[in-house]
Amino acid sequence: MILSVYSIPITITVMTYGRVVKFMKKSSLHNQQHRYATIVRDVMVLQRIVILVVILIVLGLPSAILWIQALITGHLHPLTYRIQAIFIAVTMFTLAIAVALINPQVKRLIPLLNKHNTIHAMIVQH
Image (cartoon, rainbow, N blue to C red; front, side, top):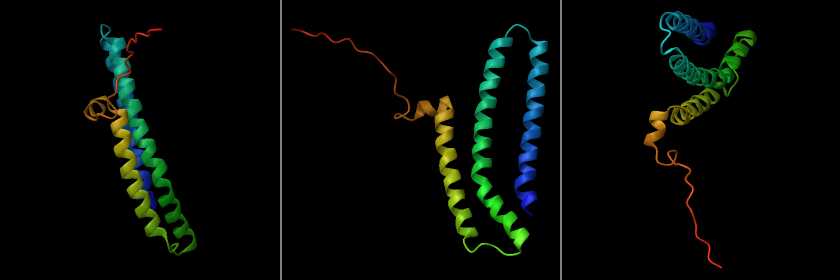
């Protein structure tokens, strides 16, 4: 069960990213005019996606480990469901913050994150 819940989605995601990278390489060879800008944009998008997937994988590991332990020992740890609930909540919270920090369109909508560093001139009189 743990293999179908945890490893199959990760495998599908990795295969999808591989196809996206393969498609990007193919399309960049056909269109030489805007190649650099397109590659930079695509790499940024892939980096953002990979960050989100890594967050999902890392925060899903405790649940996966507890279920693997249950399969090996034959019984669940008494706090398995509570630990899973905590990690689900932490994952949802972390992903919401990560999307806000990673995505420039969302970042512009949040006033706290949309601060610009400006330098103001001061006149000092002695």
